Length: 295
Image (tube, rainbow, N blue to C red):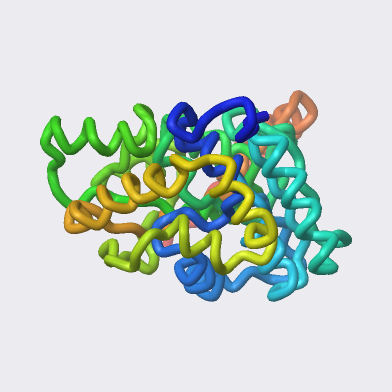
C-alpha cells in the first residue's frame, strides 16, 4: 500500500499517485463521460456487472443507485477497495455493491458469470488482447464489454511518447481507434464499435477537478497538499502534457458483444445409429417389393 509518509509524490508512479489520492474519475472525460456511457449502456436491474479497476467506487455506486443492479468492483489497490467500501456504506448501496482486491488478468470468477463488464482507463496501461480475453471468459453469452479508453488520433514522435511515459508510466499505450477494435475482435467479441467517440478537450486538470468534486477526497485534500509540497507541480506536469498535446488524443467506449456459441452437432450414439440403419433397411426392402408405378 502506498503511503504519502513513506514515499514522495515525485517517486510514485501514476497508479500509486492515483491510489494515494483516492481518485475515482481520472479517466478521459472525467465523470461526465462516465454518465454519458452509462446512459448509452442501459443496464437493467437484473444485470450482474463487473467494474474492473473500480478505484474508489464512484462509478459502481452511481450505477447501483441509477439502475438498481448488482455490481462487483475489483481493483489491485487495497487502499482503493477500502475507500470504495466506505463510499458504498455512506451512499447506502452496500446491499448492491461488493468490492474485492483482484487482478484483471486472473479474475476470481467462473466462466459465463457477468452480463456486463465495465472498465475506465485501465486497459490503456495493459496488454489489451490478454485483458479482453479474460473479460470475454467471465461474460455470459450475449454479455457486453464497455471499456472507456483513450485513443491515439495521430502518430506520436519518440520525444512525445517519452514525455507521455514520464507522466503516466512506461506501460502507457493508447491505440488508434482501429487497433482498439482489432484487439476486441481478436479476443472474440462481435459487433465491436466505439461508442461516444470524441476528441480530448482542454478542460483543465482532470485530476484536480476530481479532487475538488468528490466528497470523499475533499476531507483530507489540504493535508495531502501540505504533507507533499511537490504534489501540485506533479499534477500540473501531467495536466500540462495533455493540454499541449490534446490534438493527438481522443477517447470513447470500446464496446463489443460475446456471441452465443453454436449448438454442438447432434450425437446419435449406438442406439440411434442402429435405429437409423434399421429404418434404412426397411425403406430398401419396401422399394424392392413395391416399386413405384410408372405412368
